[in-house]
Length: 441
Image (cartoon, rainbow, N blue to C red; front, side, top):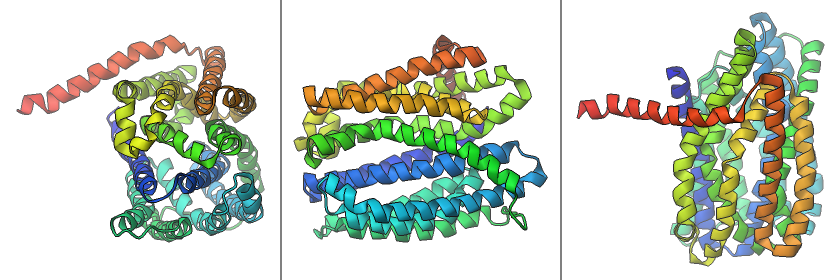
């Protein structure tokens, strides 16, 4: 347990850094640029987030799961095959960005997107070594290096944006994207420092390991794409059916909700490599233990954040984004509800991927992605921007109900077992606090 808490600490710090720099970027951009420009940047980052989730699904998840469960002599073949697939995927993404930049810019009536996607095509190639260094740290449960790397990768563009704000020299969106490329290059060297000597490549690629990674990855890839579609359908459809200014108005609620999701992503990163090992050691009981403890820990960390944000939504929006965005508070209150559902859904995916059943997760999320598009269209046309938030909430509820049924049938996991564990986590936290802090004072 102490090891998990230690790993979780750096993973949590890492997620905080990611969300914090994202907040800082929007905080200053909203005060320097028009809502249309901010909306264009939001659309750009939502598309690139999908592309990175493709990388996570097709490369990271298969690599981590298979590398952790493999014998030592098989690992070099898995590493070699994974890197080859990573290079091919990155070239395909770059070609897609070059070809689709103009159509997407026309779709959203945002001409800035053409240059942004061309610049990101370069960045996606640089990501190959940078991300693989990160994946190797994850299988070794070494999250400190990932944390440091993300400070560098995300901090450099944020400093650039803040410099422009304080010197009254508003940067162009293209210049920010180019700074991101430079930051990725620097981060690659940081990642190499933490994993130097850990890479042991096979002398030639192994067809069996390549095939295994590919077939595993095609389902986790589909799962991640579907997941990102569910999360971004609202912004995309607002951009099409309303305007980029409508996207800018919707985005503050999403940004704050992403902050609340920090514990979810952090803890998922720690427990993901452990699922396969627990299944191997303890069977269903081990998987059930991972799921219940991870979801309950996430909720124990999330509830104290959600409650005050719900009560003081207007104040939170005004402080972070300015009074002109205060009408986003109503949207925020809706999005906060699904931040309490996401831990269950995220860890369901962790269990399915970790037990090498990615197909189930893929088909489930594909179904919900289609449902989310339909609901967003209906609710947006009927209720405006707030309707999109309700549509997404209903989509997440649908996923929740279906995945809890599947978990019960496959692993005897009872949803209600999670809630007593939340109290146990609070007791554990209080005991640690009283032992380490109160007794020393």
